[in-house]
Length: 219
Image 1 (spheres, rainbow, N blue to C red):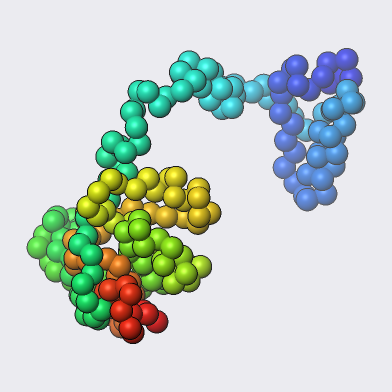
Image 2 (cartoon, rainbow, N blue to C red; image 1 turned 90 degrees about the vertical axis):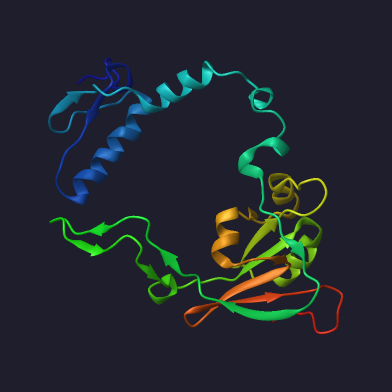
């Protein structure tokens, strides 16, 4: 291919399998294409696949500039609804075994049943929870930020009153925040917040904290 037939207008790709040195040389030629100086290394094929970026840009161009009115206020989004927990009225520590019961057969490739439907087991026998979960109401977020380690997850539970906006709070505090889902609440046996969940052996230790009382620090 000559210099008067630029690589970008012809929309071809050069690829030369081989050594690292050959790839390095090819990269130099691609850089030179910006100045109209190109060379062909090996065989060439025309690009037949659509340009993924061009497809994305074309799709975006068909969408309204502001999708907010279509979905309504974030406070009404189902994905932003946290599970409710009552305020902790006492500081206490208790343990929970998060047993799980299969709702379907687990089979091998040859069709034999490995674990039958209804089989109950403790997932903590096989996996571990590497971080603590700090579950709080929005009003207790300041306490959570001081208490949680950098690797801990902070989950927001719902309480009486207007629901907190986790996206706005995350932008404000500069730290990832998560909502407490109903299934997580049920699986962990949560009833009140603030509560810190951590794995101890093959159990989950739940430390429920009533803030403002002597000895209410979780660690």
